[in-house]
Image 1 (cartoon, one colour):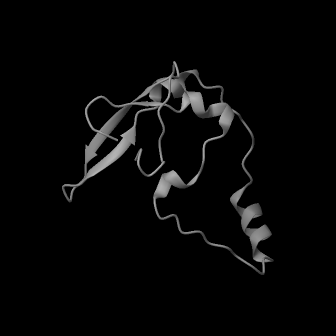
Image 2: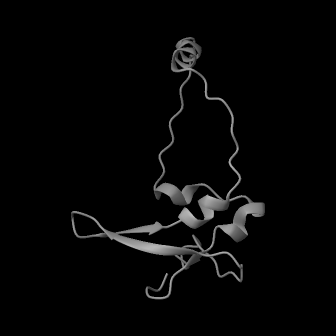
Length: 95
């Protein structure tokens, strides 16, 4: 991941642990446990539109778009102001 420029070294005081989960096919799934960070994160609350209103709005659409993410969650860059909190700690596997 380091070679692919997905992650970078950091000296942030924040750190969330890496958790490797074995999938049914025997491969490993790379996960990060953000529960501690989530407990102290300020929640931004805003109302969601009703599903009927959203469907009515889309009914008049002429163009739809679709995106294919080759590497899943690695496609969306973390905002600079949030990077120090999005650090991971891995002491076993080379990333």
